[in-house]
Length: 119
Image 1 (cartoon, rainbow, N blue to C red):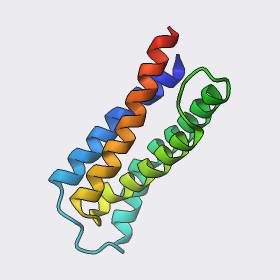
Image 2 (cartoon, rainbow, N blue to C red):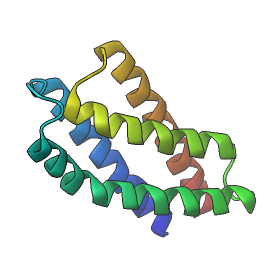
Image 3 (cartoon, rainbow, N blue to C red):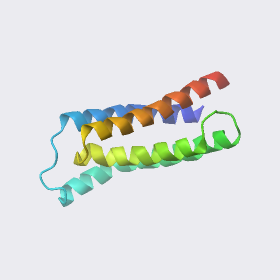
């Protein structure tokens, strides 16, 4: 099932982003064009995957194949997008970052459990 692969990849990306947040120093100049271009290049594939994941997950929810609320899927995408930027710019307190991280991970785990029961 393709949604499982997408969720798995997103979970891996989520972990890598957390590692980046925890082990990288904040940029000296957040308005640096080179940093912006680097962030854009590295995050564009994740944004695209996230968009496809949201579409497919919402379709599963509409077909009532998984027991996840549509709002949870939308919020997870929005939170992941926030986390992407926070991971590079390190512009949020660690507590807030971890809250976002855990909420995203919770929905990914819940979705994976639901998908496992379908098989």
